[in-house]
Length: 278
Image (cartoon, rainbow, N blue to C red; front, side, top):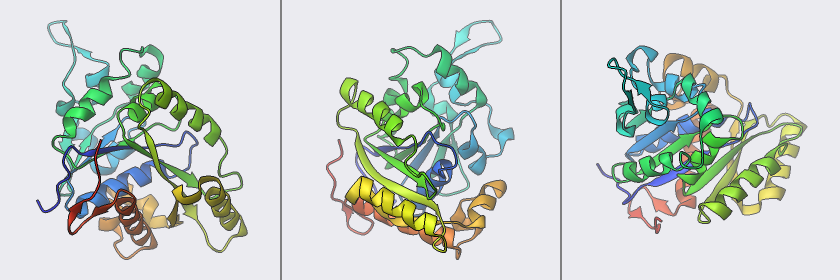
């Protein structure tokens, strides 16, 4: 392998407002990093499991993160939990593995306690020894699953839809992130805010981007993700945008997003890591 980052870099993709392009961003960031020869793990802790079914056929998934964090009853009646690595599958994309989700994870929002919230942190800590990047896709709501992801991460990225009220609800997300920083992990850093579903023909999208840029300053990505139907159809055939439509706007924009992300981390694809990974 040409590219290797010691100790790996975990990051969460999060926005509790639906329609932000969160899972699309998590999937295509992960695939884009893998295409650049970085060994990447996509962790799907969204009970909707959209990232999981983007890259995996449901029929092959016999162990998932529900078995890891919630446990299961064996044939002998014994309560057991699978280790995290048992829920990881190879995808069709070289260098990209995926920790599979399941609807059962939604139960964690009801039964998780303060001792459970750190379990993903320890799982990711071990995974960092093997992977260059660990990308965590989260559910579109606030709650323990998001807390788990943020605690396990060094960075987070917020995809924001170019719409009338692009920052609606971001203050609630800020409150959650502030809580994680105060109580658990003060080193958690915002890597950037990414404007998605952008249509340069409309005034609304331009205004939305300006609002994000004014709010986040240099944390606003210069790259924007334009509206592109290929981004919608790619998951239906278990592909990232790069395989499905390599010459599309979607592939171009997400390629630029991946490059800008590496630049923000001060990582050169040719040359090696310049970052002090925590």
